[in-house]
Length: 131
Image 1: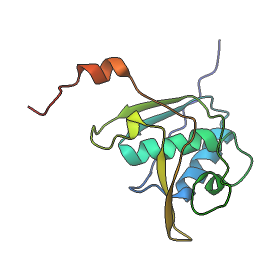
Image 2 (image 1 turned 180 degrees about the vertical axis):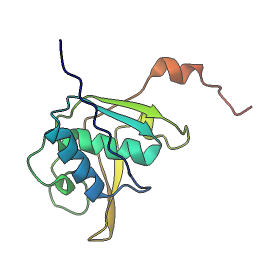
Image 3 (image 1 turned 135 degrees about the vertical axis):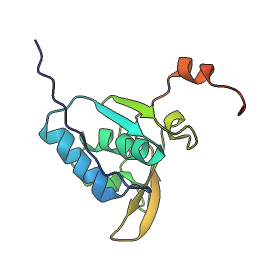
């Protein structure tokens, strides 16, 4: 029988910060989690995408963010990610990019970690236009 570890990470702010990503990666790594679950809107999903890759990267997660580096680190692997969108407006659940802010440098940029999440069956049941 496997032991289940449940370690919530709360407090992902709108326009997720790299400090939250780093905190999340430490939490996932310290608890030997093998899966990341994002429950929330676009900011939560963006942070979770980068957390899922950052936990398997030994360097600074900010190196994965395209912010003017001549050669940013493009992650080639990430933990599995399950996203449960609570807001169907951002598109974060349908693409692999993530926007992250650095509160120290005041820069905001994007990453493309290898995390994809899309439940096509659920998407196909959504109405084509608002009621």
